[in-house]
Amino acid sequence: MKIEGVEHVGIAVKDLDECIRRFENLLGLKCGNRRRVETNKVEVAIFECGGTTLELLAPTDETSPVHRFVAKGGNALHHICFKVDDIDAWLAFLDGQGAHLVDRKPREGAFGDRIAFVGPRSLCNVLIELAEEK
Image (cartoon, rainbow, N blue to C red; front, side, top):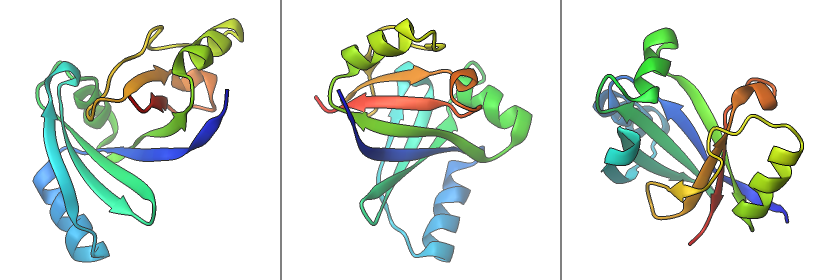
């Protein structure tokens, strides 16, 4: 059981089009993929950057957790995603350690990976996503 690296950094945004323009114009990055994820009520824009992925997340409706997040604090870092080799083992381990698990079982992520979130109160007020490639 190990962490294989940072899979992506998630940034919650109110206006996806505007933020895509800023990342492209100011940083020279190019949006490589964009899609809606109905199950998570977000639209995602992906930027590859030196082996790490940046994921801009915009809510698609007011019931999205990302909507509540940006309504409180505006555009901001939302989560860090770690690539893991065995997500089921990680969830069992973290549960046994008393971590606050948002997801007790993995679910499908935006690009087909198995994902689960660990609540921010468990890890220094940072929301953590675990992802296992399918």
